Image 1 (cartoon, rainbow, N blue to C red):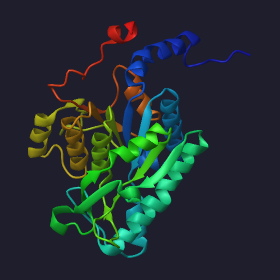
Image 2 (image 1 turned 180 degrees about the vertical axis):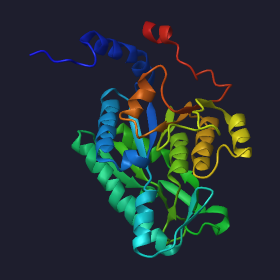
Image 3 (image 1 turned 45 degrees about the vertical axis):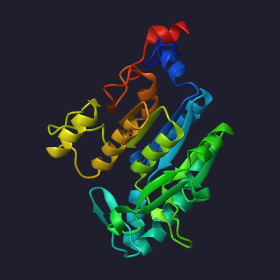
Length: 304
């Protein structure tokens, strides 16, 4: 019996060959992935995500996962009748909320992601930013957001030591305080991913979201953004709400040593691989116009 396949053997081989320049470019490099949205809740997408991370690791690429969990936090706060509010995409965290935030992020979601990756053959280790004071913070805007924090320091050496030992760090965005017996700080996961990427010298930072990327007012995808264009879009209201921390994090990353930042659609199966290993990529990329490493010289890579 003959079976019809969507791709011929030759097409499959060509796909692998087309990926070679990108595999060479990212071999040995660290890539921070902010994991959130449907990719974090859909059983099928979670499996695809785990496969992607293991694949990257087997190719010699070093992934670091920073996860959110806002939907689950809000769900539990509602069940416990604890009020919840947001300002400019940032959660206002009271002391009772902080206990729930840490329980959900560090105790539930972090361990579930770590277990899933290990089940697929990865060597993942789940940690919180409070562990060994990897992330330190102070109250954001002088306490206006309660126990929501602003990062003051990331111990990149500790994270890089885990990477050198062959681990895939899975980091919950909870920060430590300089005060003893402090409950810690809730950190926006997008900002945490950016700060971690800068601290460890990552090549890229990817943000998995529930949108195809940054959209203009006509709902069309904006494929490339830089610092100036972001400021313009924020002024005219094109970029607003929960997209603001993501976009600001991307700009902060590329302005502080990360080569590129991307906001991609985590609802697309294997979105990470599509971004890294295809010429078109997906989503919105953030670049510095004065960065000579924005592109990829295919001929030079293939010659090496």
